[in-house]
Image 1: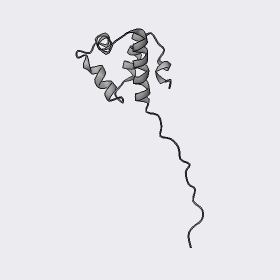
Image 2 (image 1 turned 90 degrees about the vertical axis):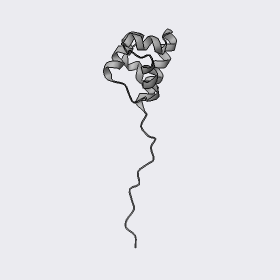
Image 3 (image 1 turned 180 degrees about the horizontal axis):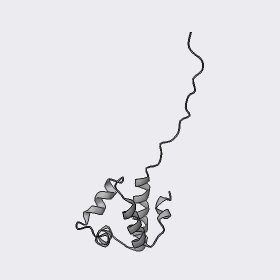
Image 4 (image 1 turned 180 degrees about the vertical axis):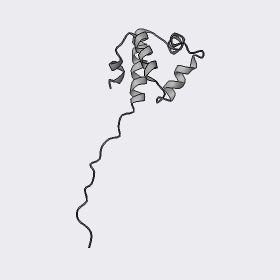
Length: 84
């Protein structure tokens, strides 16, 4: 004889990948402001312009300080980076 009814968990969608959302919004605001990845790298003080492109490819790489700097450079509020 089997045990009692099981408490099956409802299926839920996986949590959003915030890094992807953040970098997508950065790219959107860059386009709106006419700022290229090379410009953004230079403004953030990265020696190699491909650093921003690498960060976008590995979207989990972004620090709170970088987000604040990017928002200041793009002239947007940090909350705007979390919009879907």
